[in-house]
Length: 532
Image 1: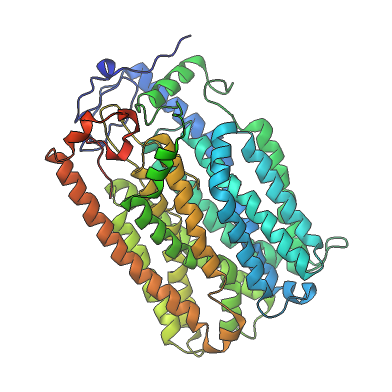
Image 2: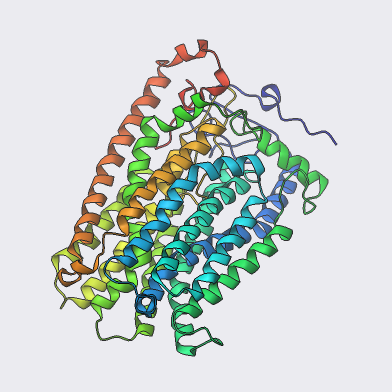
């Protein structure tokens, strides 16, 4: 059966509207509104619903569990620390911070190169790297000194840097961009929240049970979590459908509609990869949207990664007489509440198509939460614990939320969410939403998340041992300031994008129709509208 992309004549394309026989959701207001009606053949509609339901049941759970394991393996070091990791490995002074820092240095270095590797080799690279970082987690159970701790953190950073872009790429080859909004937002928030909560619960359970053979204490955490990840990576090689055009899980009518749905996105949304060029890479690096979102993501990582590593340490300060098991249990509750609130925020962002206001709300919670910690003393135990809920919720909202990407064009119908970090935080979704064509979008995500690791590196030094007597004021003040700056940058970026949209509505960028390489204009195209 031959599958032909719907032409503009078949779509009834005009600047301002998109109608296609196999599309359930239209384009945004400036080029058609996603809430406006679209005429659909009833039989095709039924098949499409069946198709999407099948994708949801087969693909999303696996992608979500992969992210769950990634977040779990990344953050378990914090749980192991309060269970005696430092003492057993002979870590002193800032050794723990150095090890945590090395993970993010390697992550940042590998982020962009691995994005290009995944674009070249596709699906198979993902389960291989999941199995790889699972093996690294498993080996951590047998570390015995400072040098091995540093080496293993470097290798884990390499493994995880390759996994997120691959997951994003796989999903973008199955779903339309508007469908990705709620789905990735849901599974990412659920997976991240469950990982942070489950990590604490699992750690407390393993420590309560005792040794597993010759593996003792905190080492059991890495043993069990490593085996889980390795097993899943191997299963994923055989079970996860690698390509929509060949997978056996779809019927022929479903496959035909699946391919037409994606082809209807237009050249930027099509699954044809344009040739990567230095011009497009430069374009991805140097534009207002990428630079602003990168800064916000750096600030967010200072909060999110700091919480993922140091929450048990902070709780130990707040509850000095508590057992290790109790500390692990206390660390679970904020993550569960944060995931629920952030899911709600994700839904609001999807329905209102607003990245900026949701980001501002999340950053405001950060300012309040860290302000409480900085402004109270050790006697305010309950108030400080409440502040941890605010801080965690803040990081989840604009750090692990997701939002609708949209664009419009004469032939650039939509920006599919190829994101280097699958799970796209709201600010990453903001960056990817306003990036086109495909190479620019992939590189924008890679640049934003790669440079965002600067914030992760800073986070590893935001809570240092020498600052413990002050209640970690350095970390608290730092997060207060970054939260406030995110609010300012969000407002500025929203103002810029609204200005550009109004200018294009008036024809102020129509001269670009005369330029060569129209297919590479992407977000510079006169018909493209920024989402803010």
